[in-house]
Image 1: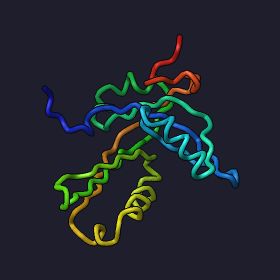
Image 2: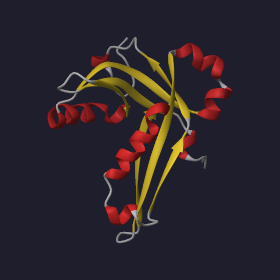
Image 3: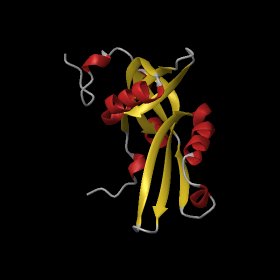
Length: 155
């Protein structure tokens, strides 16, 4: 059994452009296994539409540099951070972990947004921390998003 920290492992993501009702767009990265539910929620709760959907693999900085000659040829490469918010719940005695992925340029904005969603008493305590793990996203745009099922395309 390996005891490596989970942020040392790669993560399958979906990269997409999100368009709001005012036709403004931004790029989002969502865990592959959560994408369809997330897409449904964004559309029906917030009126956001996912477009230009592609597969993406998040790889930590060290692993990317170790195999850069392979990853650089695998698709479009983005500097992409993994942001982990860890909130300790003293009532139940466990931590709740929230992970998000953002382009390096959007990391601080996303951290601020995540922190704005937790209560003031938690923000003013030592019961949480935010850790940013630098890495890269390697995206492939040649996969039909209608055929995305757990990262496999019907070939």
